Image (cartoon, rainbow, N blue to C red):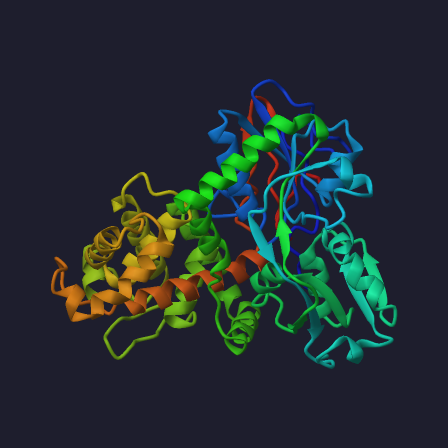
Length: 475
């Protein structure tokens, strides 16, 4: 059975003990308690001890904007948890769609819905070893699964009613990923999922594909209990401001511009995770202990550079597991580039040094992606691209913006004015995108070196676990 990300839910935020049956604590003064659904785009572990995700970053920004301390409690169905009351939660977020019938009927009618901040399509996915349907008519008599608590079951109420010829199955699984995994493994033939979640997981689970969109786009929203009308107004103002100043667009670009590799390449990579990575895993982990660079990121870089071949030598003279240039090796103390340990340790130190040279204001994950671009093309050309991005009124601190500027350094009208001249700027863009894709797969399938649990005020901070990662007794 494939490993499933977020297949168990961590203890809720601000809990003093790790007991899965405990409810989140009552909201304290100056705190914002949010029920957030873990998922491949909403909330997930990021680089190092960072928490990441589109919705997580939004609630984090909102809490900071309001001068509140953010406490997050995971919930497989945030809307139901909020409706149950007694949790002290102010906001439910992550994978919640605005119901068409909200004003007229159902328990949702009493809830307060924010303005929409993104829209996604519900799509039908199928197992690639099976039949690809083109229309609903091709699915007559077939079983089609929808995840319980995902929000799509309510959003698709009309669709389900219009197609009684389909055998609809509402499945109580821990996450959309678990549902996609079952389709990929052939346990389920068909399922309906949100398009952005399907896209985020297509290189992790290789044996599924989307067939067609099953309904019009659905609007993602936050939900608040009726007593928080003033807070709902602040949320709407917050989204409006993020749309005006471009922040929302930048976040959408960051989280939904997926770094991917072709499916066949992803398949080869997953086979080599089984056959070749075990030979190098201990080395990557030792280097993480020495440098603090996530061993899975080092493995992703090494695969992109050499396909984990410690003796690899390219036509341009770069050598070894990490394909270091002779100049880089000299800067690192004339290391033996064909010595696997020296190569990985040198590359990790080099990447760490590049990150240190970037302005401190640049936050993760942009800091790492920009450093990776510099690893590929050099810090000088990266700075030229950052200056060019700024001239074009783009953020020089955003990887999404800088990756637009980098390819321009190959054009005379741009490189003639650049301090360091011509550069093949498309190469680092492709390099970073592929490293990110391999890294995402490794994050999905390989546990971190050590459990990460941050403590504050005597309480454990919840974060979504990954399969294989120690969960401190939580199952």
